[in-house]
Length: 146
Image 1 (cartoon, helix red, strand yellow):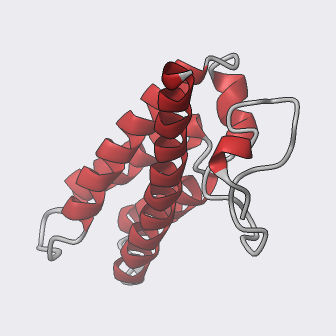
Image 2 (tube, rainbow, N blue to C red):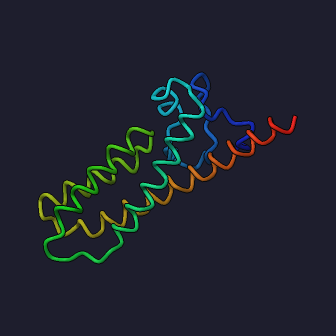
Image 3 (cartoon, one colour):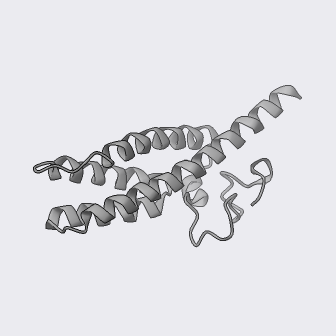
């Protein structure tokens, strides 16, 4: 795994990302994120922080035991996290949220398992964001020292 200080975090020119090469798909597509923000590093960090907080709240709500009649708010939750995830390049989260949303709309009993898959995808994305933001903070403090 590349060190974050040496990574191309938020540099759209390079295709390398600071995630394990074992990952079939990186939890956050940094090239997509950079394009979305026109390469504005501060905006990227802000969006990642906002998504991380939102995703954490959503994951907590997803873990609540399902009850009769709560499909509507769960559909809304899945739909919202789907859009947010796609905006920051967390495409695995976006796909998992879409699958969960569709299962809920269809009354599919597999929605319970899909909620677990969504929770796991959120966890991977949040872990990647934590790495990215800690590297960005470290980079910023290094610049301030010198």
